[in-house]
Length: 116
Length: 115
Figure 1 (spheres, each protein chain N blue to C red):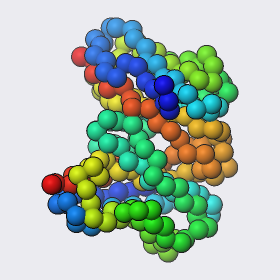
Figure 2: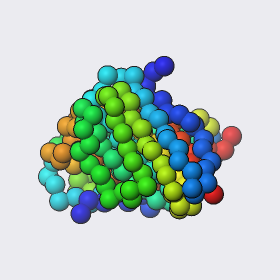
Figure 3: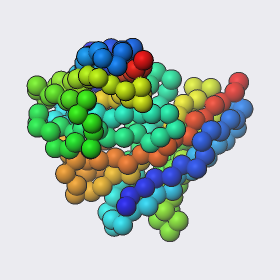
Figure 4: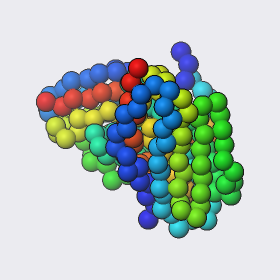
């Protein structure tokens, strides 16, 4: 069965600190996609990144970076020099490939609070 | 309007009421989804539509009834709900159902409270 685990329920940091959000996944598929979404207080999930299972290169986008390691089935997300606007719930998700419904399996989310 | 919109944003209803949630996507996508988000639980996929045809009903109770009259609109009709149905209901759309290739775009959700 496919599963995504975000063990950190809540994280609180002070502005300008770096913070890493952990994501561990389980799947029997050899081809899959991993996602991170941000859910600010307004409610909508905002797409941040998609990574396919064949691409283990780390990715950096501004203050955001992602570390994908198939050996440990992890896809961790780091925010450098955090800001108050980064406060949100962050979801990691896994997608089946070849399924009929583009189904996303979500973790339970990590609530990040960045204090000024 | 841009992206995915949902109305109403907040809804309070009694257990005997009938109400409907509306979702509209302005992205020209062909697939639409309903998700339920309850506290401390992963998002649960409820229904998936592709080109107005339902392709997944994820063991959702019959008191939730989806309707997709065209590829831009999706409704969730509610009747005789239970208090445990209180949650944030999110609508999403994607270009297609190609697994993983098309990211899903989400609306802001409807916060539903059942008294």
